[in-house]
Image (cartoon, rainbow, N blue to C red; front, side, top):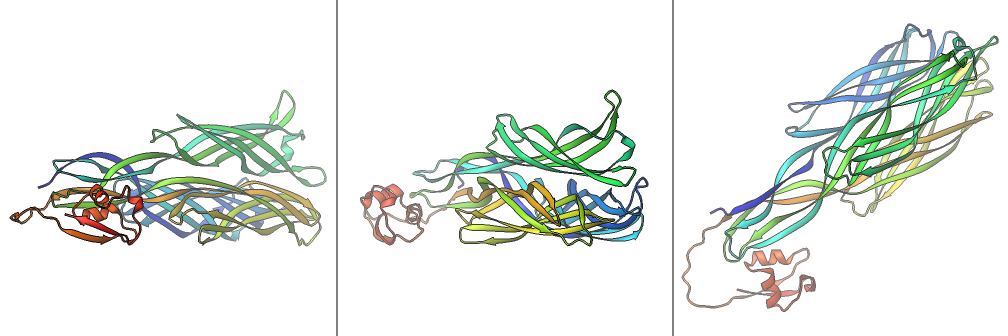
Length: 513
């Protein structure tokens, strides 16, 4: 007969699928009508934004767009930049997509190639890398007690599991105004602006997480003078502060976040009262954040009775527990030697991107190797050129256990400073590597307990059977007691032992029945 099982239910996070893939994209990009014709392209860069993920049957559909920037030499021989947005959609067939599932998607461009079709069009071919992890939230029954089972022996299990909730699209507006030295707005032309985050700090409260930091910007523009077109850079520093309310968790034990510039609106304006020109920044800062909550749980993972033969049906559930988060700052110092055709006049623009090229697993560590890919646009006498430089870096993460798993891994440029000296560029900056370490956990759940009917045996009299059992490696006293239909306390008592810790490997134990 079945016994009455007393249960409590808990919601657990399970990774049901993960994928890492590449897809090629091709797009014809047209230069906007208000931009001049192209003579040659210096570089094309793109930022990938995923806007939605939808599950239909066993297919995960990812939609988004790539915001391209095209840096080119116009027909007049001067530098310009055009922007274009190319939408994309990608479908991947997966399994186990039923239920309450969160999709964690990361996407980025790994390679961009191009061919000029004519002075107004460019054929852009790119390779996009998409990484995804699917987390299912399911309710599972924990066994807390069993009724109507005589002399029940229970094996309790106490563990800490981690629950997570992803909160996206938390957006704030950051605005700044800089007074320019120039007086004639019509002589100024905005080319491009680049931004990096630095001095990022965060703190948690019972209701959410406060994130503060600075956005370092650099704006390239040109001024038409009587003699020639002059290129100028203007730096800026903007403070930002963002409070994100918690969701999906009772307590915030940890969190992981990544801020990014979602959109930017930058222009010049004439201030009539002060008769000055202002450079106006209007940025939308979006933060992707995951909240983590540690939950202590206790359940009965096995049971038996020495007096009743029973069958226990069990299930094993895979989940995880957050061990620690890590963050490392890697300093970068490099001298980039240029080989220009003519003497260098000015460093106009710097672009950078981090790429992890290899991951090596050691006995107690994981080493990440990567490159900081830098691109420089310089002006020479009557010429504009682009140069590339790959700066290598590495980071070794110590692991207390190789059963750990890295999640929420991110690499970003914290700051990058460049200084032109003759035909060399001095590069100083830092790369931030951060992530979380999780421990994979197997949770044993008792599904059912049923009594096995025994063949009736006539009792002849009171007697004992004596048996010797030799303790095997990795064998617990609970397992020995269960197999021999006795109890842990009985084995300890019969062998005059105070605790299980006194039992050595291959030690003989007396089993009395």
